[in-house]
Length: 103
Image 1: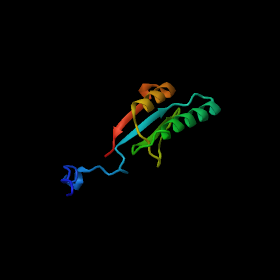
Image 2: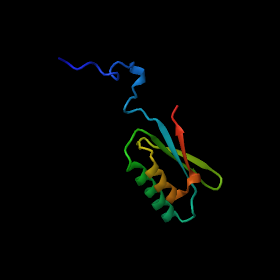
Image 3: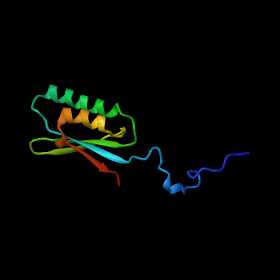
Image 4: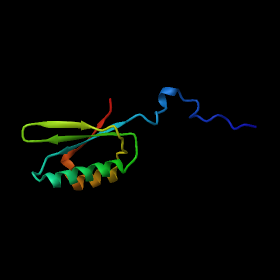
């Protein structure tokens, strides 16, 4: 005999999360140091750390300059977790990280 249907199978479709739906957005605020080569390397390290964690969360860089600010949103996704946030805190500081719910 077949096993009884599980309670998960009986749940409505709108309760099942879609696997490719972003859930949150990680925003990293970055201020230039004045050393262009060092800033490029720092951006690369931040980016590499973020994409090293697969997941469905989006991310963006909020780059501050003397008289302007730029928000760069990426098409790639990441998996926001405590380990990633700890790595990023070492690179940019906790005050420069924000995790937002996706609307």
